[in-house]
Length: 444
Image (cartoon, rainbow, N blue to C red; front, side, top):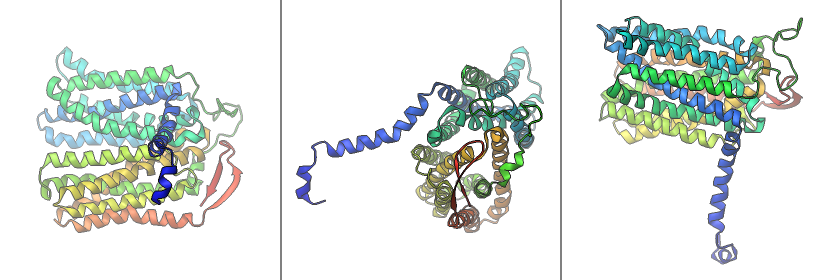
């Protein structure tokens, strides 16, 4: 800008412009959080997520303290993860049939009671050796209820234009809990023992149940748009959950997400391997890498809430997934820690908007009576793919070479994004509104 123009500008022009931008980016968050029902459910969910982050650390510590505890960790992991798939298939129809407030509250009461059983048995004398595994299985079986129930409820709590902001807040809750939960769990275990951590998690479940029951707005399909829930009218045709799988945009983005999650499963193994064999610092280095990933997720989630991907969400998802895929190349910077940490930061920063915009896309395209089943199905598929990536990358890392697994991670994450980006070149906007949501669709 020429110097002669500068005196014509108002004295506080630059400061006012920055302030206006900041106010514009935070206005959406303030507007969404001003909605009482959403705020209650989000706060309850966030507190419960912190407790969840502490629970796995506590159960792991309790199992390790048993005779032959190291070998039993594998069984604990199976109990923690395997029931998720059965629970995911069962929770969707329940969420679609009943008021989500009561389903979320019932889930919290059941899992809270399971967590409380260990400190109660400890206070009475002795914790049965099998009890931590039973508690882990109960947790896994009901895990998908809030993971599907909360996002399925969001469209009933905020207007369509604020979906990105609401989904960004959910993502921020996950990221903060992922950082704070394990750290707090470790501190509390050192000071009070694993039983005390599980007692705290039981309290967090009780708070989430209270928050769900305090929501005033009914969260039953059809309660707000005049349509009935599945099966509510005698003789009415019940919509099929397979309808979600016929939506090409949902299928394409879900497949791309599954591929990206395979790559992140590889990263879950590659990170500890790097910290142990290629980078200085050992466990502290692994903590730093995970902190860089979480910091990137926090920054990406905050920016994604501004709605940058609202106009062409499929294309926006493809672009940020491709950007996130480049972050895996940062692992090739080893043994330079800062370069590897920068790669983790990039992965987190661009994967968070990908998640948020995809969730908004699903909310707009899945009919209200199918949201519970739709989110349960899609999030169960997301949970299934990281173990596959871990299994694929382990033999590659065992061979001792870094470049092949890094190339595999980059290609698995990036190629589906390129395919998705190419598909969006054939996007045709259609003005036909969806029968249930009234939202204009874009077909691939």
